[in-house]
Amino acid sequence: MRDISYRVALGGIVSALCLVTMFLAGVIPVLYLLLPGIAGILLMIIAVEVNTGWAFLTYLAVSLLSVFVTFDKEAALVFIMFFGHYPILRFYIEKIPLKLIKLLIKLAVFNVCIIAYFYVTVYIFGLDEMLEEFDEIGKYGAYIMLGISNLVFLVYDIDLVFMYNLYRKRLMPKFRKKR
Image: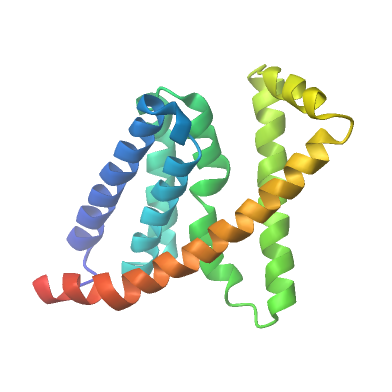
């Protein structure tokens, strides 16, 4: 069940599904945040079925290929900087016994990733439109947006738990029967 051909086949299938969702992020620009999140959820299958190391290798492959496949480079960047690795990293964070520490680490990881994403987008890729949008909101626009994005992140984290449980309880037994 855990032989190398199974790992490669599963990694290829999940990579293809992730790349399709990333491609669709360029075709349907309104979903440039939702579709990378779905691609990240798909990577959880590798972490559950094989291991987190193999999931990180799949994440690296999808990240590299999504830069070339995706028309919307901002969607590829948000996948690379957060949505791709967080669902895998979450497996390690969940091993921490204290709920408060676990939550603080999750929020710290999210905030570091989002702030890094902001700086890469604005200062490396030169998309100054983000700065102008924050000016329209007011003096504290960036802080307000960061607070709102933290709330959205908590909803995403709950969604990851839901999707993980859905896969483990409903989908995984059906796939195991067919093998």
